[in-house]
Image 1 (tube, each protein chain N blue to C red):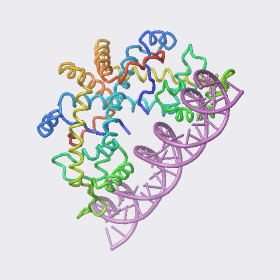
Image 2: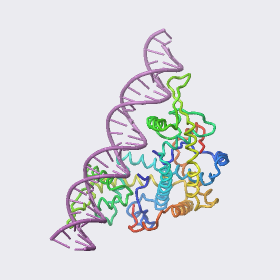
Image 3: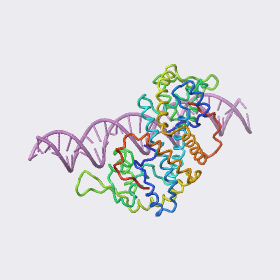
Image 4: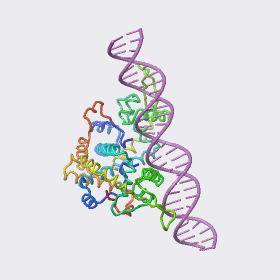
Length: 179
Length: 179
DNA sequence: TTGCAATTATTAGCCTCCTAACCTTTCAAT
DNA sequence: ATTGAAAGGTTAGGAGGCTAATAATTGCAA
């Protein structure tokens, strides 16, 4: 289900009229809000086509990207869940499928018998490298309507919004991810 | 699952370095792309809190909003599915739950015995009116980091992206929605 | 008028996420 | 040493999407 379920966005004039009935409605806020969700949906739908082309789910692709980082040789389910933003239970299922497909292997930890290490297989690395050019072309095409200056301005505005939304600044513990 | 599964966004320097290994990677495109999905996720997470406060799902809230439009007295499941961007099968389930909760009623069509009309009950209208002030305050708070000029600029940039993504301009058949 | 295609709504079954509970292992405090 | 809390991974069950198939109805065309 898309984040924003409305197929057609309300016109600005409609928002103005609706604001007469609803004092709390801020038209420009609503307009920006709706366009934000809508654009995210359309971008993600484009990415879904990429994922379908390569017969992989969003979750499995993200796990493979995380394990493909040059300085990461292996990782644990808990760490992958944390970096991905899914629960550990969900990560177990993602790893199950990836392992069944021969993309990753589970390995026991020598010191702590609770922890498991997940590593991309040779086939996993090769499979991801096959997808990446298509992925980056996809991203470039999506952003192509904006020039360099507009992209920078967009990022600046989005960062301002993100700062206002960050619940607690304590989450900057882990190292930033890489593509 | 969030649209973007990475908890921490890659730093711009990481993108530069990754571009050395991947010729197709455009750093500024990736940066904008990642921030766009990330911001959409954070905004939507905020809305999820609103929905949980009022014990309603995103889908059911959208259906009630569509039926609450002043010029809409009733609508059909097919039309609601179309406007919401979900399948008719999904819409059947949403209406089932709303009907069970007394928010909407199904009514037979006088002329076409295939079609069903869905209408908000008095209780449905009242229930939605109770949520709306909280909803609009939520939206206003989310957009509060940007001033009027920045909001307009954001909408302009997002619209440019949307135009590049629109698959076919034939979809402008239905009337734009209202909040 | 009779038959066939299109449309409406629904049902059934699948997938993937989630929460809650569970078992094992580790670690720390007594 | 022992016990209890914390952490890692997994399992079980539920919610909500989706596609595909089904049943009833309509409308058009031969």
